[in-house]
Image 1: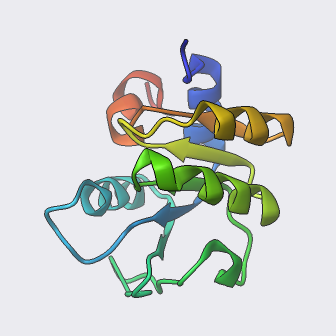
Image 2: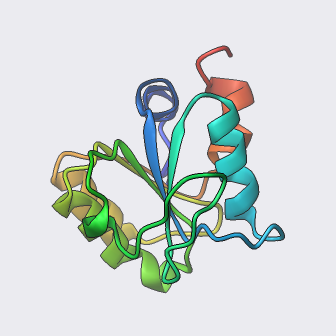
Length: 138
């Protein structure tokens, strides 16, 4: 099953301006670091969400999604699949517009719950990879 409708990808990349990046830290060898930098270089506001709540790429980090004191458009998830479902549920709880599970992050039950709650969701894709094909300038 495809967890990434092209129209959903286009909409998220074009319309979501504030991206909470769950799992983002200052570890430059992790994919989250590079993807967050990519999103930021394309005009997106990134918000690190990590147990250490570090400032990354000049942006204040937060311990949880619920700690972010402003609206989040998209929750970008860089954690193992078995940990991702509760994060999708938290995204519903903060009224995010979309959830994006990164490459190899798949949870069909979370997808069903999240989309049933009215959020747009993409799984097993990377926005930095999809940008060239479906991003606003594509």
